[in-house]
Amino acid sequence: MVVKMVKLQYKFKNNKIISLEPTKIIVFSFIAVIFFGTILLYLPVASNPDQPRISFLNALFTATAATCVTGMVVVDTATQWSYFGKTVILLLVQIGGLGLVTITTFFSVLLGKKVGIKGRILAQESLNHFSSEGILRLIKRVITVTFIIEFAGAVILAIRFIPQYGLRGVYMSIFHSISSFCNAGYDLMGNFQSLTNFKNDPLVLLTTAGLIIMGGLGFLVWKDLYEFRKNKHFLVHTKVVLVFTAILLVFGTLYTFVFEYNNPYTLGLLSIPDKLINAFFQSVCLRTTGFNTLPTIKMHEITKVLNIVLMFIGASPGSTGGGIKVTTFGIIIAAIFSQMRGRDETIIFKHRIAYNLVIKALSIIGMSLIIVITVTTLILAIDGFPFIDTLYEATAAFSTTGASSIGTPNLHSASKIILIFTMFLGRVGPLSFALSLSLKNGKKNADKVYPEAKIIVG
Image (tube, rainbow, N blue to C red; front, top):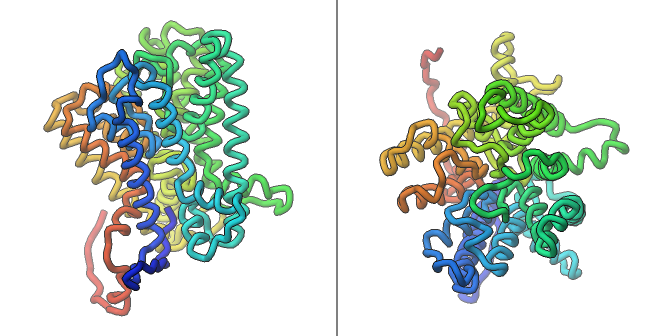
């Protein structure tokens, strides 16, 4: 999330002025959506009549996971929820993927309402855009293209789902298309099996993978790709996203293919074409989507370790995905290579990266590592599952991937509460959340000059 220290003022009846930074408003909007989602999912009508009423904690967990597009589940989505409950989850996923600010701004424009500078700044922050210029036009394009892509995905999936599930296949196609594009990973297959029954179906897997990739690229990249015919060049941001996304997808596909090739519980019994497709699908889903065709719990530990790395990196800024983001990872890799070449500045694609951006990238990675390690330690102390599986769970929650090698329903209530906070932090971003809690923007100390410290590193 791009952080701007611009304050928006709101006047109440007692004439008091309250100043809120856009970051705080966006964070509070996610909290509001989670709160209302929890209330709706806790209603008796949200659960199937033949299922026990869900606990408030599990309703809160589900609402948080849906709004943060994590897809981590504590109850089976297909059997626990009624169509009302499933539709609430779907709406939370759509709102969480695009952002409440983006959606409300779109409808304001659609209804002909004037959007002032406050609304434009909020929209800019919500989409992680460089400036508020042309932001309303961008929002209209983002919403329109999102619905077109999700509709197209639903039509393609319906080719397979309607013959197999009948009229219910129409709803399932829409549900899975939105869940895929928003990088949520919720499914309606039942019995926590995700898409394991479709591991031999290229149509479903490649369509789902395509939706996930498009949702994970980020809206700024879409805009740049659309304008390439006119500009004849890409932004450095777009180059970093496309190059590192391709590298990570290829890397993830190859290592899954190699390390799971003979594993009888994952790729071992599949044909070589199906091995490749499923390895690719696994690599795509680790870009912060909780679908799977291979049982995570049966994977080799080396595969889980590399999965954790990919989940931690995640998708792109301004996208429906999570993680530290490929651009953050790309900046740090560029900084490392620049240092190895003896350069004082960070260079990427023949462009210099600002020093404060490198520091911000380091801060994001450092804070994210602290969160994941802390959450892993706490869950280990509470539940006592194997370390690698606990680390997998913590990383999946923080990166909003939603994959699990433990089985999230098996966790203690205290662990679920910890994961709720972890998913929320992962969606809004640890740095943005920290800034939203700060009461001052630090300008008072901006003019202070401190003595230089000499510390040996390395």
